Image (cartoon, rainbow, N blue to C red; front, side):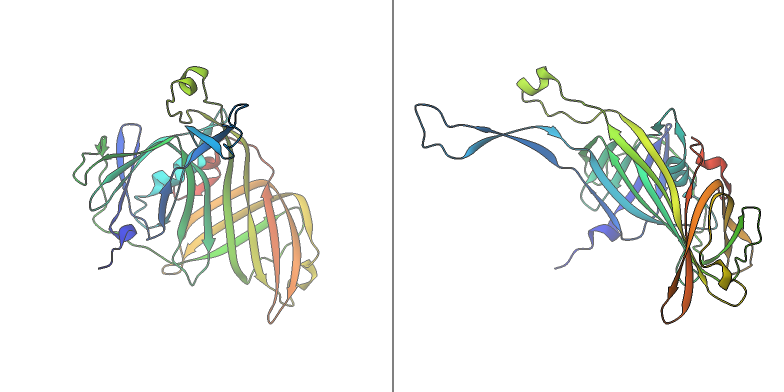
Length: 300
């Protein structure tokens, strides 16, 4: 007998009193580990105790990851909002529920630490999400009632293929035709504040993380372009002050679906003379704004 745990799972996000059903691919994982502190048990009177004892009272931050196919109905936009919005170096936290055929698991105080997008015409447009949380528990059986006001879902779910268009404006003319692919990453480097207390450690109470801060936010990626006669002179370009706009256009209909403007940004170009000559532009945002959602002018 075989089981398909991930395909049978249902993912829910509870945020601001609302409950969102998120449809993911089979790439859904979550877990939490615990930190061990060892100590010597050898005494002056008993030198034969060579092994160390163990004390486990502290939990590491829980971790999770899942892939969300983006759809024309945009029912999954809450995920992108939670990944992009930041206030006073704090990410918006939510509770995540995973409901299987036999159990419902709850991950409290979850935050999204990384969101990645691949703009490739051959693949379905998908957002890859990674994150952390404070505490993972089994909330109940498969019929557990997940709290929150259920948000309405569209009658259909329409995934799509997109192709990327790019503009680079650093005061000079740049040919950005013949784009092969674009990768975009929103990375939040988080630090969990200390949560260990003397009282809980002495009482052998399991201590879980409780708060976090974002020390650094990085928006970066790579633009890959076929090298042609029109852009061959750009193989050694670089800039530390450019206006970069990346647009995902629907393959069917040729209309804008997702657009982000990064200004200012830096980039460096590098050539790759493999079987097909290409060149890549590695870029990174130079703006420390707290509201990435304002830079995304299409989709959310």
